[in-house]
Image 1 (cartoon, rainbow, N blue to C red):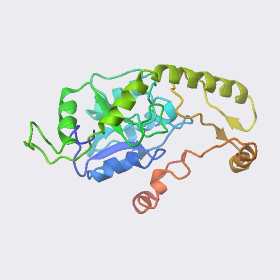
Image 2 (image 1 turned 45 degrees about the vertical axis):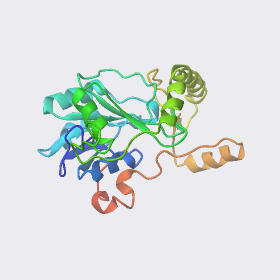
Image 3 (image 1 turned 60 degrees about the vertical axis):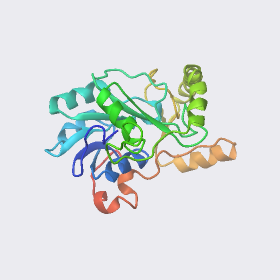
Length: 263
């Protein structure tokens, strides 16, 4: 998706450190430079801090729709338009999410990892776009750069999705709306039951959320204590994400001194 939007080595891409490391690795592997923006209390990119990170090298904004919760795309697209930047969305956890404020050209990357709302039998993913240029590049690049049989127009890769995965996903796709509807119903029960408990922040209810995960913030340093208690009661929980990208061993030399207060 980044290559399709003509992101080149040395170009800066504004994103977040509160994500799976794949978000930043995609930028790094094509020679781009991740620029980490702080997040809001809902764990999503703080659109009010994006403009302060834009430089002459900035070429794109890469927001992450986390846990099924959508970023404020109306505000982000307005910033991108004003500064002539590309927008590529990490929607890997956002199958079935309701998006608002879309621009004329938007490109989203979805993951079909088995744990997602629309998960495959194994690995897989897809780019969704309303740009013919992005579509044509992606279709070519994923198949060794071929345009016509044995005609390799660009130096592409082999990112073809296995046909068996496509069949499996096509069948599941027909049920995605009902899956998400059930997730929202379960999440609403959690929200109603937990929102008034002291020491837990659930955030505001958002019906646009597809609830890939239901994430709460545990206050006053009690997170691990609560986690152990729930484990004893047979309730599994995970921390998302225990180590932000800028503190990962592969990035700490470059970003260890980053000022990101919300992390």
